[in-house]
Image 1: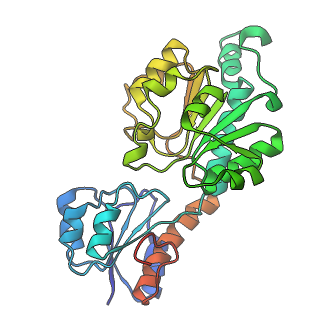
Image 2: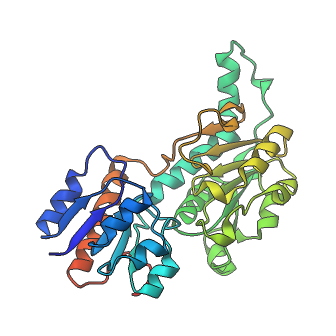
Length: 318
């Protein structure tokens, strides 16, 4: 019997997963641990691993002689050594389309809240004030520039929404041609141009070695328009200490962060105490539909593999 180990999860229960695997005649073992030694031991007898945040590195992969697939709940696979998996002959699959509207809506909410100064107004009025002049004058949408770092499914959907509202949109993505962006009403730009020209910067690149701390002190020093930063991708794409310094000095107007370098964010972390920062607990993906889809599609990757098929969302060895 094909055997899968659920390494870790954050759901109330995993009855959905158990039911799907049982109906497919797949044995399901629940580990619910991110401890490396426990993962190593469980992987030894597994044909597939289902993982949320547990780290699957080369040592784990090399120590699992029967392993055929690592399926991830979600889009990013920075917690899986995909290069090692490919070298060893283990497929890696994700779920790359389950929350496109949810995350783009979350980023849009941050942009609109920043544009209309809603949080500043809220703090002002909740503290007893009643003066529309208490905040910096908002920009009309047609006069504001939104810079997108990345132009995959989510930022492309966000661009559609922004363009419909009337924002000017520019985007950085080395893998997307300018002509394709132009067809969406978006102008291709470099990271430097985005930092210099944008009133709002929304982060959507994947976390890989080349994007770790893509935004840091040097980039923030280029931010001539004192933009808002919106991050719904991965925390380490931004150098957090450099961002905090930029928020304190006014190089950045504010930040809307769904992700941070360390998660959960420590209780005493300075980001929790900055008045120009709005935080959410890695929730941009979350909705009734997305909650179901992320689980069903991650499981289906494994069911397809057990049937001898290439998983729908396979990233390698297709």
